[in-house]
Structure formats: C-alpha cells, structure tokens
Length: 220
Image (cartoon, rainbow, N blue to C red; front, side):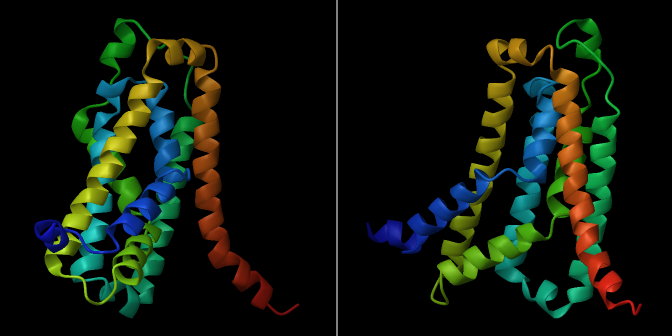
C-alpha cells in the first residue's frame, strides 16, 4: 500500500474517472477515427490510434513541465487553435470527397494508408487541438493539487496516455468486426461524409469564435 501511494496520488481515482468520462464525449479525434475505421480495418487505422495517443502524451508532458508557456503566450495558443481549425477543415473536406468503395477485396487491401501516414495524421489531429492541453492542465493541477510529486504526475500521465491508446484501438477494433462492417457496407460513403461534415463543423466553430467578436465590434 505504501508503494502504491508513492506511485499514485490520492486523487488518482478521481483523475482516472474524469479522464475516462471525457473520452466518452465524441470530439474531433473520435470522428477522425470513425471516418477511417469504417473504410480501413485495424491495419489501416492503428497508426491513427498511436498518433492520437502520442499527441495526448505530449500535452500531458507539457502540462507537467511546461504548461506555463501556453498561459504566458496567449498568442501561441490562438495560432495553434487556428491551425487546428484549418487542419480539421482539410481532413473533413477529404472525407466529404470520399468515393464509393467496398470494404473488402484486394483493391481495399492495397489502398491502406501507410503506418507513418496514419501516425502523422493522428498526431496532427491531437496536437492541433490545444484544448487537450487545457484539459490535462486542469486534471494535473486542480485534481492532483500542489502536493503531487513528479513520480505521481509521470505515472498518472502514462496511465492516461495508455487509456487513450487502448480506447481508440477498441473503437477501431469494434468497427472492424465483420458483423459491424456488414452493417456499415451500404452506408460507408455516408458515414465517412457525416464524419467529414462533423469535423468541418468543429473547424468552422473554432474560426467563428474568432470572427464573431470582430463582426460584433464593427461599427454600423
């Protein structure tokens, strides 16, 4: 028990629960995964899972050792958020332009995006959403408190990164099940386009938050 308290902070159950509940709320990463998983099985989407988890891990690291950068440089946060909006619009546009294709066959096998390409796509989706940084900052500070040790922060960060990876792989694995794929066969194109439209809505919403105050402030 003493070793457990050294590795895990007293607020770890609350941290783990809050983090998992947040995973249940669909965001840009979720719809990106769905958009790829309905067309490509785990082999064509595993890199996305790793990239998204790696991006979350980097933001957790930032929350531990350098979270003050975003707070002291609001312009940097704004630039990252706007880049994220453009990125979401780009991915969403690609999904909206998807062409009809079956879920099986040699053609689909050859069409799998490479692991490196998947990794970069997932990493970009995660890193260009600075709200991840604020979320982890809130968890690592407000929940864990000032008395938390570096070891406890590190263990908590590894736990959350691992849970993100496991959850994303679970989503992709379930979607890749033959029974699920069979249900998706006829609606594949529309599922991809719906995912693309939702990503575009996220992107437009981010841009709108910056443009709307300028419109309101413009004198008639």
